[in-house]
Length: 280
Image 1 (cartoon, helix red, strand yellow):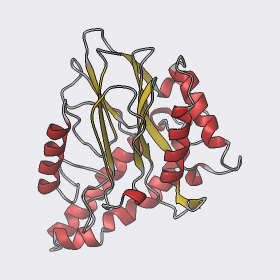
Image 2 (cartoon, rainbow, N blue to C red):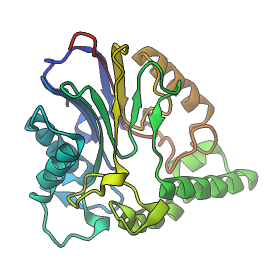
Image 3 (tube, rainbow, N blue to C red):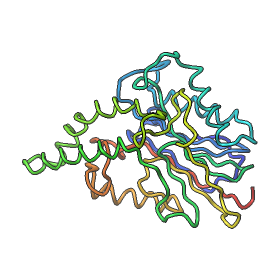
């Protein structure tokens, strides 16, 4: 999903992990006022909404919401608009585990701000070298558990190819990840709480706006399919390729809740957007 190119796009890429664009749950929207990378959450329940996975359903709802957003909107007004766009398409009584979910990185041209709504990455000159991303606590714990299970399997004689094809660590953590949906936008969950657009109001303290300094001429937005978000697409792709070659199971440097399935391009869909701010 590549939007209008009214804002000055330097480079962009969206790649589905399965090599099938129709199954990709990441997307990019660019309008006169906003640039956004949207990451629909990977399905864990088998639920479908209007024939689409939850991630694709949430991706399209959020994309339409970005396109219809008031150019002068604040981050919190934008979050409300996104939330209402999704909630209006869903039954009010859906439990957290069955809610389509997406996270977004957004650049506001008028406000010259970067907004982080969930575990997406942003980068510009002056930020930490590999991008800034908030990782969900539930994912950290689940990834560590999965890594321990797969390391035990390897020590017991299993091969990496066998474990990519049949991942007992992933099977073990899926119930935890599904149950952990209760922490989404839950102001009572303490350190376990995390933000995402799922049709339920997002507590203000879970989302972040960052003013882009006047000296900064480019910003990068990316989904978490990029473990390192670097100043150019080529650098980011090269870093990812090196890590995938070294750790296709994603139990070492790429520690994560899923590995690279046989025949897949990566462990996750990915979207990268680099825009020029100096001329806006």
